[in-house]
Image 1 (cartoon, rainbow, N blue to C red):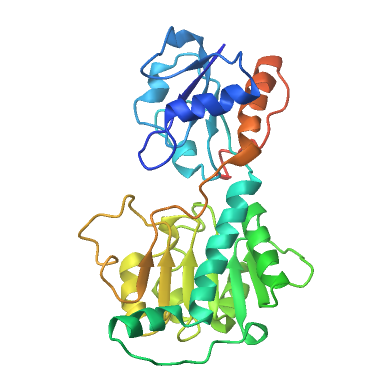
Image 2 (image 1 turned 90 degrees about the horizontal axis):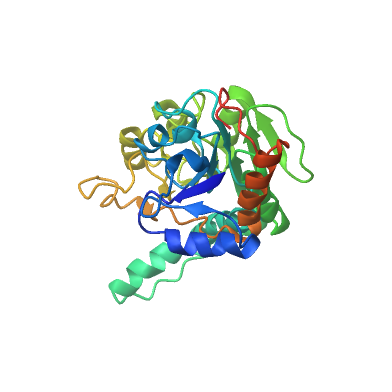
Length: 311
């Protein structure tokens, strides 16, 4: 039994770094790469950030795909992945904390008028503007799972009027929770900042369409640290021109890397970050080695995904 690793894209850790990190938890782990594949029939587990189109067919005894992160939509829908191959993901505190910090950082950027001061400095203009008061500000979090829940609690603890939305009812102390379509409309219409931390599922793809965007509070900030296909991007550009929302901060886009000719780059109402809101995996890599041994011993896997639901 062997574990193959493949990052599948640039701009993150290398496979050599990943191998070294995994060997800290289990120095005896048999880790393969494309460059050093050995006998591919030995590989029963694959750990990837992005699953390449050709890789599943190369591994005749593949039993488990471990996602090195949370989002698994491209893996569960992978056309070459056999139906009986199991999928697991990571639930790591490190990227959850970092995503919550990313959301907070860009909310504070709006609260403290930082975009205006950056523009004023370029024009050598001394132009004081009153900051927004935190207790008078409503923030909303779309998605109240592991990461979204942590984000909502951070905002709550800093004194924001915090709202959250999920598909099914939830209760979190100090957070006004909404659910279903009516609840989403209520949250969008009330909140000054809305952070989306949702997986990509048939229900969420395109959820923020022209109608939903038009229902946002005028001048609100829309932040997306979940999946890029949540937002209808052409509709977003039109909505920004109408001031609903007033600004969008996108860490994820429908195509990544974002093409150089995308109008999102140059629109004054858009801030782009290159899918960096949650970077480090921290101690969650221990779960990769744990799942390797659990698979070998026939034990329940950590954070297994329901392939039908997509999460």
